[in-house]
Length: 337
Image: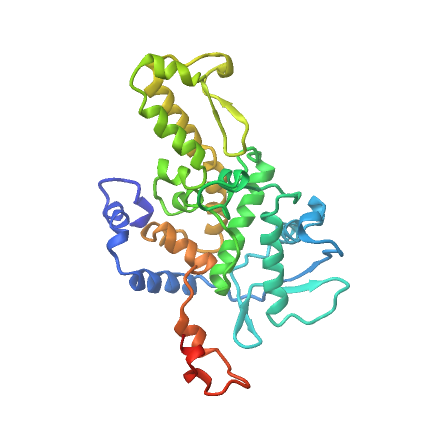
């Protein structure tokens, strides 16, 4: 029973722990079968949205495509996003999109456009949703993964958690329609969704400065070296603000004898600061796609299922390439190279 994967004495726990040893094709077949068996048989909804004439990052909060579609879903008791229809050249879509004042019939293109618009609104430095922030590496232009966005730890009221749940629903729609969406999220978000535990390396992957500071402080050998760092009982959060680890932590120095406790507490606070948002995303995803199979997937497999694989397959590109006014076609030396 995979619902009991967190219980150490259950077979589901052993199966989840062995996820890396299972053939990806086996898990993929099981996942696709589960999605297919839970597909809705009703009609798909039509959403009307007015996105105005401004770009995604300049739209007011309530005028974003994200908020307009979310409110239409929430107001209806019949919209589950479980149904899918096929239009055009086998393109799957979960709703028909009507951009007011723009014309055009939706045969799959407008649906995908709406998904793209929402991703741009969610990942915008100047946008008004503020559900996701540039990761510290992106903000400081340092280290790897500078394209990643992290949940805003300050958005934890029920209003915002409901919006994160809708982000999860959009992920479920991406799975059901086999339409990859452009959400650049780190392992700190994906791992909790498949039951994996985040570690210091996951944090350092998007906050290199914190990771290096942690390693530097761990290497301190004496009180003199420790005092030189002038550490207090607080830690800088993902958003850049300071979090007190004890009352009035900013004015309480960390003694050398307390260093291990401080390092442990600082790391745990940082690892857990986005858990409420990640759990809300998972709750939303689970309303559209069954949660049951997720524990046997790796976080990377879930990311690739929702966002597509980052690897470009040259053979697939060759199959869809058309050569015009190019002598020799695919046999030309330039094409082969």
